[in-house]
Image 1 (spheres, rainbow, N blue to C red):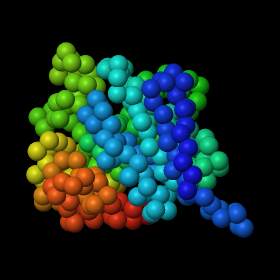
Image 2: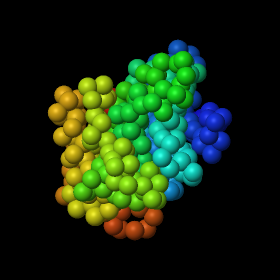
Image 3: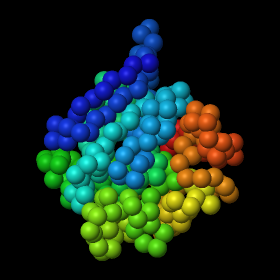
Length: 270
């Protein structure tokens, strides 16, 4: 395995990308691998270590090239910086596909909670004015993911919102109309990539309606998706097993832990 820290955002020095790459055998030309970019959660005010490197290593062990996006969480209210950083990260991996031994047509993005909102934003808002402005003359589709794996994602600014995430995104004094600009179930279109979603039915922090609303919007626009709703589990389960439990039995769920094998199968079939 090779680990590289990539400072690819000169305009956003607080953000960086970490690559977790296979050391390929040298006797034969390596077959390009699918890639996954991981966005940890944290309510847009922090980044969860439990949804960071440990998740990237799980994808690496499943045969993918993995990257973790450490996106900006300071001084970005109302200006779409995290979205731009995610889009630039996707474009970077696609432009350097040969260097990273990545299949440029199979670059996925995954995220947890608020990181799930960011991952979904990259898929839904890939042609947003802020992304186009950051890309300049480059084709904006270079920053569009080929698929999204959304783990108990923040989606809606409406009745079932995780309000803190939207206040951090739009500003502490923002109105509902301003927060609604980030409500992703309202922005799904025919150009949104396919998605895999999972949630727990009794998530008391980010209600399951977030995933249900997004899946409904995908269905309405004929976008392929797979949705798993597990009956029980607290918010922030991550991999649901001993790799991410930190001694807290509530973070262990053998039933919900099946999400990862399902997501790997879905990503390989995409």
